[in-house]
Image (cartoon, rainbow over all chains, first blue to last red; front, top):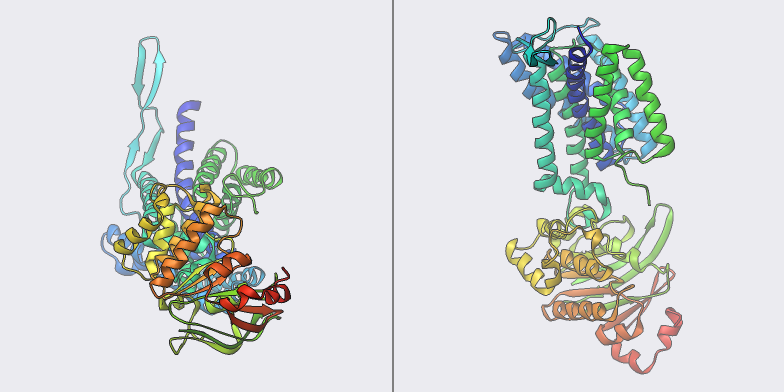
Length: 308
Length: 231
């Protein structure tokens, strides 16, 4: 295959990764932005979403769409409820102290991971996609006979992958609308900007924290349900999303929703493209180098605000 | 109306207020005066439930409010204009006002009434709070607190750093609130402003409540100002 069509394929692969990463990192960024909690267990809520998706899909049976839709509704809900419990039982008692919450969420990471190992097992298991059709992609070239369109051999994608990209865009838009246009978004932003003043105006900050922690975990689980028909569910699958989410959140600017989405697109796309042309390991090395550069030259991230 | 009965509070292990008592009645302006660090802002925060009490009690119309969670305090009708305004700076004027309206108040009716008091804010509803001038920011902080339809209003140095026309506007607003029967606690350092607006003045020193006197008493004898405020 020529370079052009090959690049198009790489971009599509990157877009799928970027879409899932944007959702996952958004959850991490939201939790840090509002609660100032570095949730080291965030990747495990991603894993939990994938494992629950497998349980739901295999328990329901029938057409894969039924199981997938049920997983799409149940996995974020269950992961969110587990996160609310974590907030109430661990984060709140330590008064959201930054160091204590890091240690606490490391503990949660191992509890969730080992619980998954004991109940789900060490195997990687697939979830059937609700639909999957091969879509041949056209390519355009300017030849001797002018502009020509043709379908190169091997240049194709999968309808489910396009669905993942579309679904992520819809979820991100819905999230943006909630944050900017709804009362719930106003309350979350007020809590993020000034916790004490929010309290002085009747905002139940403790309840907001629980909801935000649940929402962050729910977003990670939702991303996992979308990707699990492409990757497989495994009890150790939370590591990569956690690392990449941290990279994205640092590059985008801690707590900045806009920065998180843009950095996710940047990292996800470059990860996809470099993985296709060179190697996945190299893409991780480059992303980590990028973080180092950002930390040296713009520690607040691309869209973060300098501390006063 | 609002009563602080021998309260003790502070920041973690550092105690700032010691057995501090105070009472403000409906339709009264009580000024709280003292040197920097005397505990004036701490008293305001304690009333709002933002600091835990290690002793004493705060009650509103006889009902203890110091045992309520902090977010329930404004719902009882206590509005707070903190020192330095503490606006949600990245939000618009309209959103800051909306925050005030969410807890109490009568929605659109309250919003219109408050915006009528500060017409300049009406022209800037879509502007981010951080882009307003100092005076406009103070107007917004006041408007946001008035959106609660407060029965008690706490103002912590509202005229700090403002030009005379803005100070006049704040003063007029306080007088309107007093006429409406709102109990007001005002932290203020400018003696002339205190003499113009206050009904009573409470002096606080090193976290201890010292004297509460009628303003009339202070007009002819300013020794208490010298003693407790240093001017």
